[in-house]
Amino acid sequence: LLAWSYYGERAVEFLFGVKAILPYRLAWVVLVYCGAVVNLEMVWLFADVMNGFMALPNLVALLLLSPLVFRMTREFFADEERIGS
Image 1 (cartoon, one colour):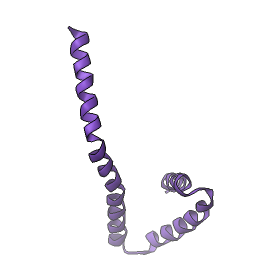
Image 2: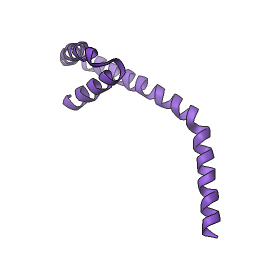
Image 3: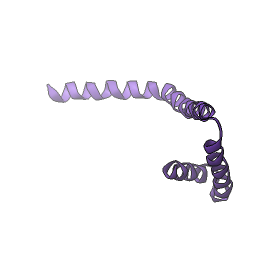
């Protein structure tokens, strides 16, 4: 819990500035309490949905950056063949 709280706080500060830290901390405390008293199945469902939401921007970035990665990979192996021979 401490690590996720810290990571989330750093992300909120980066995205929204220092003024957003207190609302984040308050929301964190409320959600920790809810996680402790709510049905465990609901907690896991919420965690799975949030992990899915975290994956979406990463998948979009992978799709957008894949042409660059393919180009750089081809260049790398072309250089390796040229240097190796």
